Length: 259
Image (tube, rainbow, N blue to C red; front, side, top):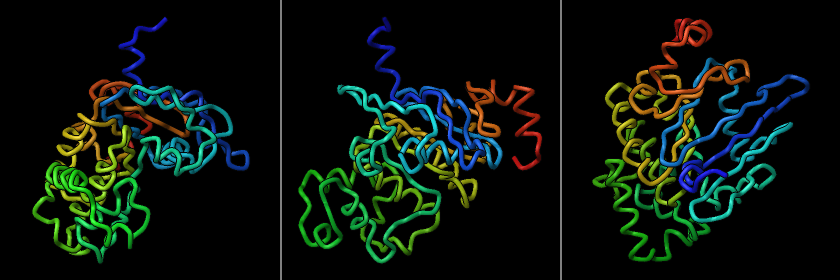
């Protein structure tokens, strides 16, 4: 029997996930474990199945076979496979897509209020005064992503990187146990990308972060564990140094010139 410590370390189990679209296997027998309070990157060339895997974790796509099991802290394990998307969010698994989806005509603070659990709609969120502890949560979360001085500014006036950080904050304020990020550094310059990596390292103290990314400097900066996917299969998993040193990884991914 596994020790309590070992069990508590695993927050997400991906068990032999396969998914077929009209006979084409986008993923084949993918199996890995995501450790609690880690930053776990999934990398690989285009078409490797990275986004499909996130879609399966959050139930946007149903697997042909296999299961995803979530281990919330202090609660029984939850089988995410077969659940409704909104239920998975309620369980504590959030996802941020590649394109920021903030409300550009609302202020940064209003966007944060809208994200809080329990606020059901825009009018209720904006006109119903949030609780004092909610506002403290919002302020401290904005501080962690470096947007505390932007609270009263319209989200539409933020720079691209700041919009991405706001959306990360909008996930974080809900206190999820897992946040999934799809290419959070896309479209950023080097300083913004570096800042994003530092933000992720700060927030992993409170939650687990799963990231899809192509920017290898960003992966090197922030990754605890890297899983390499190729043509829907797991090629390798380990720390970034071991992954980059692997000849097969170099041949199928890093050697293509795009990284």
